[in-house]
Image 1 (cartoon, one colour):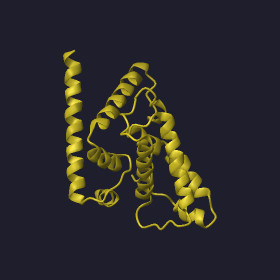
Image 2: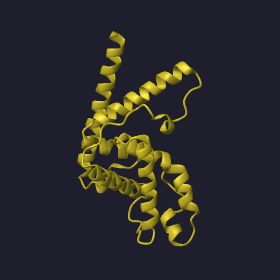
Image 3: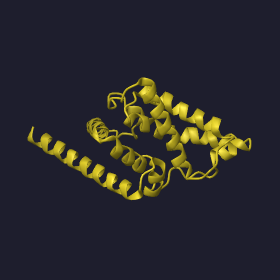
Image 4: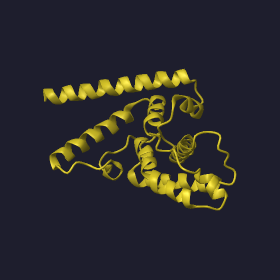
Amino acid sequence: MDRWKLPRDPLLALREGDPGPFEDLVRTHARTLVAFFRQRGAALGRAEDLTQEVFLRLFQSAGRYQPEERFGAYVFRVARNAWIDECRRRGARPEAASTADTEDELPAQPEDPGARAASEEEQGRLLALVATLPETHRAVFELAVLGELGYDEIARQLGIPEGTVKSRMFYAVRRLRRAWAEGQAGEGAA
């Protein structure tokens, strides 16, 4: 399912004077963008600020926006540029995201407290594993999984061949599976 398939392009609607589709975009996709920034290393509050910055950039660009790609790909390109600007402002590569305050952007948890604790632990572990991927692999993985973009769109967005996207995705998934299995084996031995 393409969560970015919208009934009407929000920026074209804004240009025509109808803010409704843009307001729907903000309501329905803010959490996705917060998660995008969290996985890149932003603290929860900063991820929320960056998400607002993305929406502001989108709003301000409505007058010159030309729909040349899927809307979701465009949003993630704006988000990626906001992240690059953030890293430049900070002058350093961000640290991996802390999993201590991720509850707000995670899906609804089971009611069983034991199951909830186990699920939160697994989600935190998975976020930490994704953060260990090399930046080139992590970018492809996040755009494919979070952004639900096809390999051809990822290739266009990152400016690399589609074959490179496939290769990076393959190695990212393989590395995550191996690290997950090693963690599971380590827990069983403890």
